[in-house]
Length: 338
Ligand code: ATP
Ligand code: MG
Image (cartoon, rainbow, N blue to C red; front, top):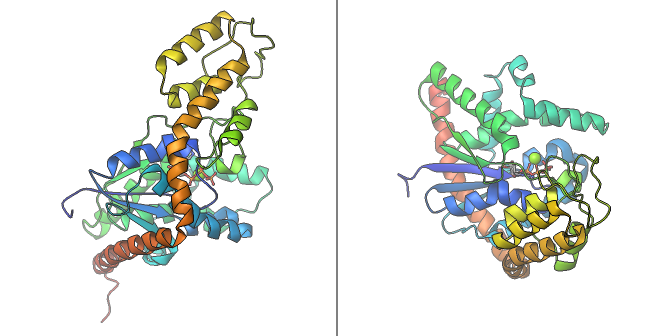
């Protein structure tokens, strides 16, 4: 176990998980859990950054996220599920790292800038807690000295920053941290059902892993098939555009019958299949994909105490490692007085 390379990655407890999480992250995690020692973090501190008015949602979602993780096949015997705030060393390391980060560098982070823009457009206050979250995330990754971070594309800038902090720390105080690498999933960024660039809990444009078959059908029925809004397809006899069409992006990602997808694409371009038939086939494909996840999820939903035990056990495993790292950091920074 101990000579395996380590992974730390995670999610925010801000709602249930969706198809974007699956493709951008979970699919990779499930495969990688056998090759790496994995820490999967439920980042509740980070969720408070922009959901402070919705603490109930955060509280509920901690268990929901863990339930979704178990349902997609993460194995808590192999990997540790960790509640961020139950390991306060995450906050301690973030505080040390905040000393190593200049305000100007921080302000240049492109993902942070985009998210601040989004919050401002919704007239939400930007708290210092939110503004600091890339630092907090660097601390999350480096606390267990992770080598690899499997994430969606929107997170890559944060991993770059994490490498930078590790490099700066090591140069100044001696080698303590590895320089972690990002690994992006098969589909780096899944579009939303509304055609927006990213399927996201916050944008209400998701298909959730826990959706029942009728809900999936309804979400697919309302899905846009033209992201530009300039090629609305009114009749099945109109030739359609397959490229950048969310319905076909989802078919490519989830339909286990590639011959059917190829045939639908051909007929779509030729104007011999309706949007509604493409969507019916997509609904069926998504429901085939989701059914085993739903079944496993139902079992874990009936056994919340098991899920809580998984969380506490994983959290304890990480905490022991976190305490070692903090001891190394204090030694290196000479924050030792007795
Ligand atoms: P929020 O809108 O609250 O930030 P989120 O949907 O972005 O929620 P996070 O918990 O921030 O979810 O992200 C968890 C992981 O899932 C990250 O690695 C992120 O890159 C990945 N991810 C989230 N949405 C997508 C998506 N649409 N496509 C690919 N990866 C995604
Ligand atoms: Mg996010």
